[in-house]
Image (cartoon, rainbow, N blue to C red):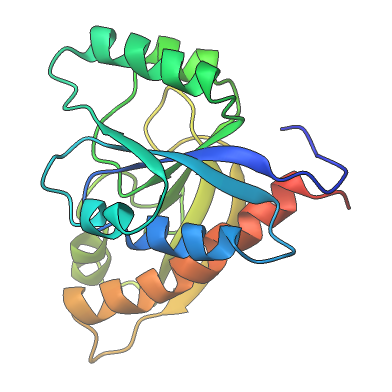
Length: 194
């Protein structure tokens, strides 16, 4: 990942499938003076994604792709990313798997936030599995996306203590709160000079 210098904000795209709480958080972060990013494009894989309502109130360009014709859609998406000079893609609750060739084209410049302490609990239903296994801690991880699921280089992690009272809903809430703090920190770590 290239460390950037200078004051110009870099253009990022955010890919969502649901409520887009990490997207909203990154948009708010992008408006801060010391933020290294500008959100220039949002892609949703779901035309009913809750995050789209929020986007309509902003001036941010967005498109919906359902990935039914994956390779066709990915070609169109790459064209948009190139045209808009997008430097980095941030996945936020994006429920589609990108192809290896798409990931290669954006080599090292796709980030994901995952609701567990990777490499533990890759994939879906992390909170259920963590509770079932009576773990003492869970958390969230920002990592670089590669062609293996949730296996790319870890940028930052945040540990969250699990109490006896915690259930899937309460743990999910606790971790989401930490995700909103961790994603901007990870972007700053990657994109600003030391």
